[in-house]
Picture (cartoon, rainbow, N blue to C red):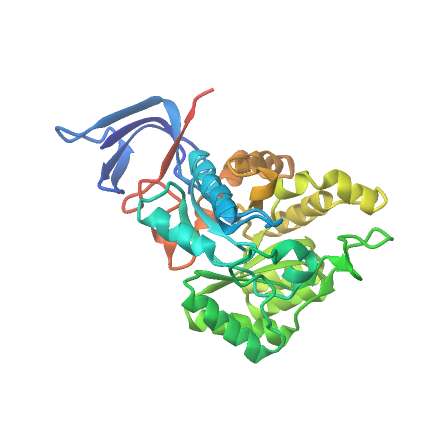
Length: 376
């Protein structure tokens, strides 16, 4: 197959190439360049009036919605639909960082790989390993639930290691933990009455270190939901592979990220719908979206790698709409090219199993995961 690309953004450079030819053999790119000879008999796709991009990568999604008493079949139907929405929006690779209970994302990943259902290339974490899940999401264990819920007991380094081993046996690619909790007393809250984040640490440094050490020993990567304070510092100090959110990003945490050359996934589109509720709860003082902007600007200016991470979830109908996040990147200081690279080469570098050699850019040897946009 030969693709004529009027414009092409390869995912690495900061500019568009023009009048390119992309040759594909099987599912891989065999050559890229201007004025390449097209083999006789090749199928030609003429995109000379379009812009061709690599398939985008989202390093933080949730295919499943919250359970809310639904059966596994009903929830799986939603998740399968979300996988198709994400693929059709141009995201050809994604990381599901928390199934909201159970290992259904493992089955969906495998079904996509077998060609049974459409969806992006997936890496999955299964259920998060933290007691926080059962506390902040009390609906995670309805009577019809047939799988282990979130809230695995990891209240010691050895229990943490055992939980990682079990998740590995269930087929996950990532481990997801939470090191800050979003509640006060028995009620779910994000902000205290004075408008500051709750940020109650949920795991000790020793427990996080045990998770990371055991996961890496077994070939898994670790992602950490954390907003700030002790929980944020524990994630970075333990060497997690993908710190998430870091809304209360302080100078010491920033220094640690830079020293360890670790990426930070700051989700945005999942926070937009929370804006009104957050402002009400904080007494109009702040919101998670506003804090995300401050954290993004601070990390971006310092040079922290910022892979595209939307936080898209099933129950808010965000799948297929993740690309709205690019506008925020540009509004908050990135150039359009820098914003795009976050979903290509930067995101690819975060993936497990060396997938950066397979996806994220348009170059020889990569999967032919391509997207096209009309030229405006």
